[in-house]
View 1 (tube, rainbow, N blue to C red):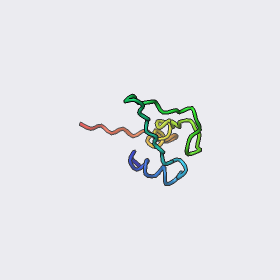
View 2: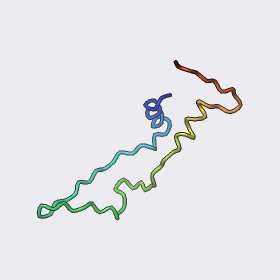
View 3: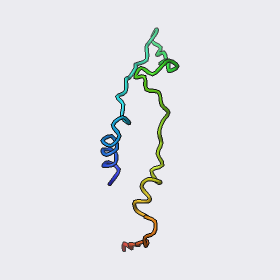
View 4: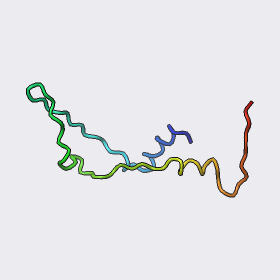
Length: 76
């Protein structure tokens, strides 16, 4: 499975991991953009911290399984 296939598989397997984003545009007062207030509650009511999986820990065992002989390919 390549990376594009992984990103197709992931939301199929875990559909709640993908949320639609509500975009709020900054307001402009007297020609000056006012930053968006991010201190309020999330409008989607889904509060979470970012999830950063260790992809090396997920993908590496697929190519280097334990208890199997290492195969080496030399390309000349």
